[in-house]
Amino acid sequence: GAYSATTNFVNDLTRLGWSLIKVERADRNASLRAGLKRIGNEYLPSNAIYLPIGERRHRIRAIHAMESFTFSTKERVPYLVCLEVVDYARDDYSEPTHSADDDKSTASFWPLRMPNMPPITVPYL
Image (cartoon, rainbow, N blue to C red):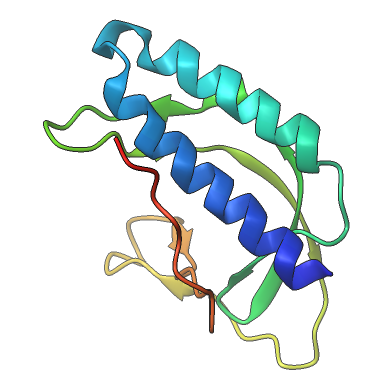
């Protein structure tokens, strides 16, 4: 179902980050993008995979791997993934929260909430 497809998708994104720890820093972006393309080919397009952000659900239509990149830290390899999403309306929609400098910026953000998501299994490194 949609819930298991979403959790499997998020788990694979998380495992990809953990797998990048063993990759040389110079090769991490290429490995990330290859992994994101693999995940995208496996799961997308899909009307079942979504991100419950704020009070809306955003169905993921595509991963834009070439727009995604890694951040370098000593212990982990966090990354920014660029997703193409489609919104669908809900009756309980509320406005997104805005940055502290509302009058200086048009940027908005939605906190990611994954209620009752099972723990992510991290592979042994």
